Image (cartoon, rainbow, N blue to C red):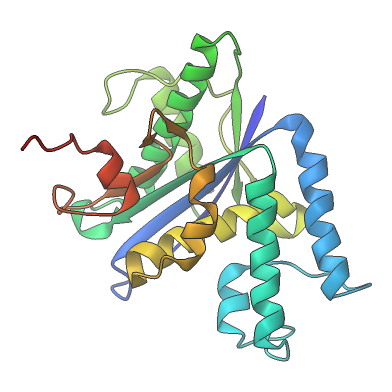
Length: 246
C-alpha cells in the first residue's frame, strides 16, 4: 500500500493568484514511521521540547512566531533539511500546477490530474510485478465531501482520460497536518511548485525535482496545466515535448 499525502497552495477562488497547486508525497506504508521520525529529529534539533508544525509559507514569510524570531540562516537551514529528508527517503512526488483561467473548477481539475498521475505510477509498478494500491490523505479542508464524491465517480464512471481509476483503495481521507509530518512535507512540495509557477522562483523546486515520478526522462509526476504549454520551458513541459528535428 502506498499512502499519497496531498496539500494545496494558492487560492483557488481569489483573483490574487494565477495558479492553484496540489502537491503530493507518495510513500510505501512501512516508510511512514521513519520519515516522521526524521522530521521529528529536525524539530527537536531547532525547537527542543516544543511542539512545532512545519508550514513552508509560514517559515518563508516569518510573520508569526516562532518564525518571526528565527534568524534567516536558521529558517533556511530548516527548509534545506526538510528538502533533504524528501530527497533521501524512498518517496515519489507529484505536483499539479494549474493555471486557473483554463477551468471554472480548479480544485476538481487539479484533483483529477493528481489522481491520474498516481494511478499511472501504480500501473507501471503493476506492469513490473509490484501490484500496489494507494490511499489519498489530504490536509483537512472545506473540499472534503466534494473530493470524496469525485474519486468515487472516477473509480466507477471514469474520467476525461477515458477509463476508471482502479488502484485506489478507498475515497480520500482527511487529517490534521499537526498529526502527521508527511502532510507537512506535502505542504512543502505544494509550496515549492507554487513558487516556481506563480513567482518564477525555482530554488525550492530545484532541491526536490529529482523525486518527482519520472520514467525514461519524462517527468510524469509534475504537470503544468496552462494555455501556453506549447512554448513553456519548465521541466514538466520540456520533458513531454517531442524533440525538434532540424
